[in-house]
Length: 437
Image (cartoon, rainbow, N blue to C red; front, side):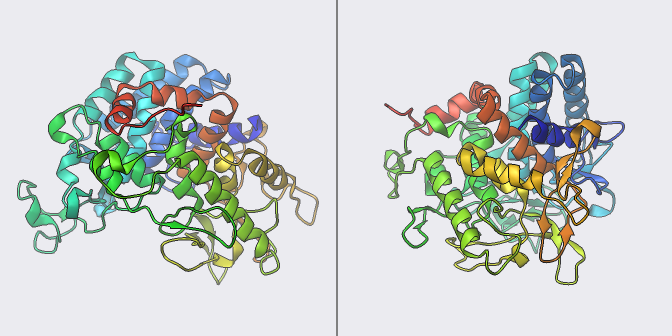
């Protein structure tokens, strides 16, 4: 596990902007994803505690990253960061490539920033406190029932923005995008977890919104039922778990807020989801050479399209709300099983060992790039039928695997995040109770 973590850390530490220290979205990219920065900031305490960097170097990197982002003039809207920013300036990408001011990417950034603030304190904590204080979640609560928009798109004309009329104070071109966060999977719950606990009451959303998220229970054959996500991808069951320590939390209860819905133990829910995904991969092993009892896990990754060209792919696997499968040729992302180690430790460890042991026709490691030689550990994805191994690495793929393994080994990220005042306040507001046993 140490070697796999070190590979993930190497990417987050080395693939950065020369001036800012901001991590690249992808190894082969020239821009930064603020979601990746969240995982980058959470990686720094791990690097220090594991002895891979000094505390001084970790602090210097955290300050460089945070100062760069906090000084930007065009990278936030109502306190919410752009999805993509310039790798050196932390500002808007040239040519409008920055896409939207994204509530979910801002959430992942904030969770990582909270972790770093608790670990380093001082100026890191002060910058993070200011960024959190300036985040106006309420401004994005423009959808029906107060649900949050996925973001603000500056490229929209005011007349084209579906939700623009609902926030006339939003000056200038652009508008809130129509898609809203409404499903109770990991990304959405983390968004609302932070949004209900905004330090300024006028910026916080109603805690009942957290419980209004859609909870649809399904199952695969005779396996245990669970609340499903839109596409069934593994990340929709482990992203929030990287920071929220669900192990000690009892099932939540929508009835506390007058909402009719099932109580859910989210740790157990994710365990069932990932065991089901593994079982479905085993059942499909006769169709796809890549799949096996110890080769499983579907999550967004760099893969290959039907012509063998590198592409970003997002698989879908039932049970899900889409109610269909999209196997994408059986491409497996090692980080899917690796990041699920928090809920499926035995199955994930077996998969990680199998990935590292895979060899090519010349007996060389197929997926492994040795971190002791500066490598980044496991490949982002592979497909044995297509004879394709991804040459790229992605921050939001390496990041969760690093954090998940650390949580299993030491609980470090869980402890840091859950000790932050915002996380404590969120737990109280949402009435999340500890297990009684």
